[in-house]
Image (cartoon, rainbow, N blue to C red; front, side, top):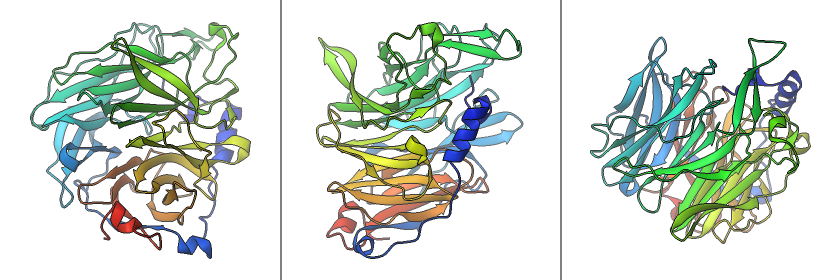
Length: 448
């Protein structure tokens, strides 16, 4: 099932278009805002000058940063490539896989990430032809023990039969044990059948559920664990790890407990707020326990928002940033947790104008930096733990509604961000917090 705007009902398309309407950027502000911290951005050279798709950033080994992307090779053929940044320069680009089956979507992002010394894991999706006849896609994982010089044969982490739909939004991270942790939206509870009146289209009956597993550096698969039995089918997820605390955030789909499973549809008018689950272990077995929603926005929507939460965790602190269209006021919000995701404080509004979302977040001393899309700009803002905030700062122009690569802390200080400009060219910036907040600049990164 490919979730795009063309799959929404006419009413849902109109609603989403209204929510994401473009407006002029806000001014820089005066008064107290000028005395608070602001974002300073510096251009960073990128490892490719070609037009690419789906850039993504991940933490590498020993403070390095990994940038991955999809490179068009002509026709339907693409390559998943990556390079590493040591704080001064990029390594040469390397290729993980290239063929004509790679699945391409603006918000479903492949990635490469470090899981140990010289050990990397790559995650992507490929198109398949399922028995139902409706085109679909599955998740693939490959492993490298030599820094990406060679890769293992790809494996499929999900083991359930596929009665309908596709395996969506793979979200990967390094576990506290040094394995690859992986979430995805799973179709095992869903059935696909042709619509009676329009045989060329299909109905998706039942719910999608959220699944999780692990892959060891040797390729051994851990147990499949269900995180939630009913979730929003078309929004990316976020995960953060701090010591033994692993916090997962996703857009939930809150339906009546009495609703029959066969009545569930992805385009239902339901509340789609952001939920959090924490990894716990019972008698040594991993269990994901839902701790509730980050905030009860109460946003009711019929369709596919294609806008999920971002998470960062460090030393028991957790920050979750997300987009909501509640009350016809599309905005980006941020909430902090000081107890490893067990509970969250009240949300802070990050965006000032009508935002398109695709938020990313990184914790910094005393607060967090959030990036998001607004109008035709990528914007960034510092939000303090105590509720103070810096200026919303435009750091570049973007093209399309693709996701922004979440900010990553660099070895030499500051944050690295990446996105595609209006020409489809890769853009990267290094961000530091400046302004009058005492110690903020040097605590977060060196001044560019």
